[in-house]
Amino acid sequence: MNGLESDFGEEITFIRLDVDDDDTLALREQYNLVQRSQYLFLAPDGTEIRRWFGPLQEAELLDALFGYLADNR
Image 1 (cartoon, rainbow, N blue to C red):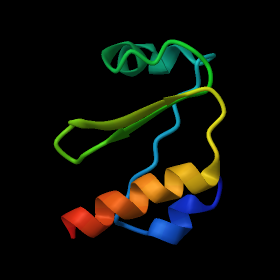
Image 2: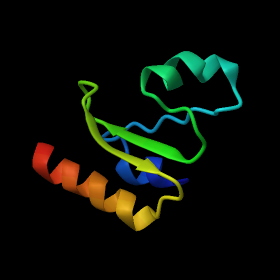
Image 3: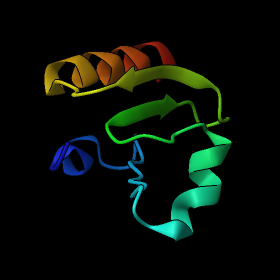
């Protein structure tokens, strides 16, 4: 995932929520992100687009991001 922020610039915002950081607990609970290796892709209005569990391949994430942008630009 590292480096994707620069690839997508202002079009996609990436937020990392550390499960070991108690300051992120409320947001993690809001989106039911309670385990390690969970990924959530949200639309700007907060609608869930896709959720992944476990290791995530960059190619799979890129497909989802480019697909979303192609449909919503």
